Length: 328
Image (cartoon, rainbow, N blue to C red; front, top):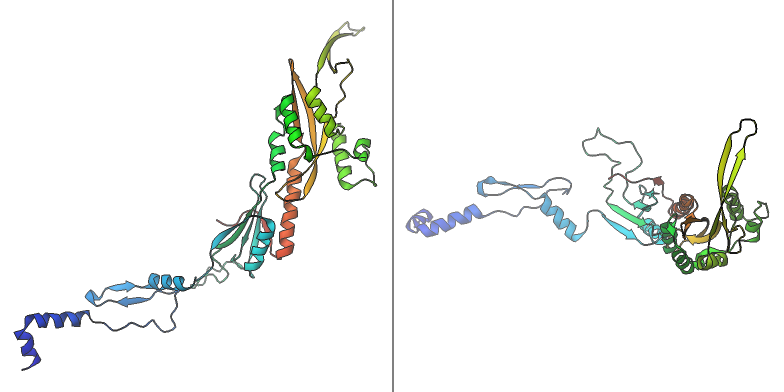
């Protein structure tokens, strides 16, 4: 009996054989010189459907081993940022320094674009382009001292509030040196002393001590007297009337209070302290007195501390530094 006759006598067997024939397929080896950067297409038996296996192969390859580095590391201090940059840096790596005072950052892009003009003529991609997916970011944490003094800078406080603040931050206040009390610039002075003396001269101020500040916060009283003066021009007969207000102490003597203090605080957490001048003023409003402490030119101090950190990162990584933010 022939195979044809057997199939005719047994339709179920014939259908099973037919399904096996239609459903059978040979193993499909990967193409020669398999390249995951190009699609891998196969034709399935049923209806000769074309199936794209590119994502399948790429996902499988990623499961076994990442095709490239990607992700963003958040570093907590400058030394960790430097160590991370040195661990992953390459010939194209670069650092971006963002000096915005409200949110200063350092960003190392390990896989940054190579140094070259963009090539838009090639069909295989720009050879200098990189993904820029592997980054390390250091968000500069400002110190508690810096945050506290900047917060109250220029704000009017009553006597008790000022006293509580000074007592809480007494370690930040530095008593003036003999050079600061003398108020004269000299080659024998330290550079920071001459800088603060110059500030005092511009503000017509004099430096006080921590003890003086604490005493004022506990005992400060202002007695105001008003004197009326009339000046007459004998030639024209015109008169000029002036009220002269004088603030005096309890003994009736003119008030002589220091209007500058010196603080030494770090800008960034665990950073070196910077000496800064703080202008001290008071304002009488009726029976109450308000005190105002204003940090002099904090932007300059912030800029100096930030530049010092950027310079340290550059020296220890030898990477180029760009001021600003990278391409988004």
